[in-house]
Image (cartoon, rainbow, N blue to C red; front, side, top):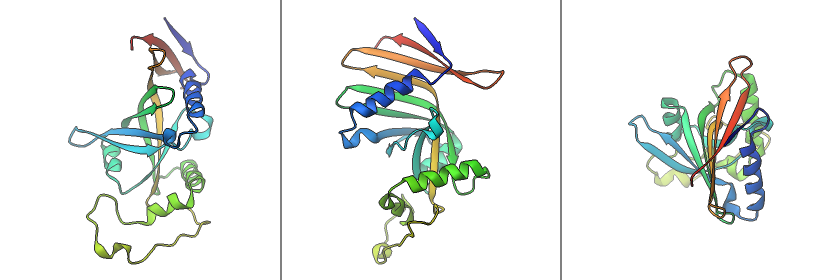
Length: 202
């Protein structure tokens, strides 16, 4: 039997509980992000969960604007993330549309959101965006001079914030052998998102 919710989605509460109960594991914040390339083939990589945007259900991920995933998201803005929590034996698959917020974004609110994400990252993480372009052949002289970064300076051009707006969520608990499917709908009147949950076969 299904149920509908117009408030905070119940899957978010479940995910926060999973993150909390697995917080002693360093890898609990790592998830896989799958996109579709211009050639129609899937592309997958591991990324870091950077929290929810402004108390919403939108998932934030930091990335380098020079990576291949940027081209893939411009070709097809839909993606799916997959999380597996090893202690609780829970898998979360969340798919939806990704909003790409890079230095050229014309929306000042989104640029401020990008700036917050930059300063919430560690200095070591920020330094990665000063390196050579990802995916290109390495040159021997690239490491001859270490880049420097002013800790108070705003985001560099290569820094990009990805914001995934979930549309469907699939949660599988292997300990209890239960699986829940969540689907969203946006109201045509006020644009408010509501969620329907259904228990399905594992």
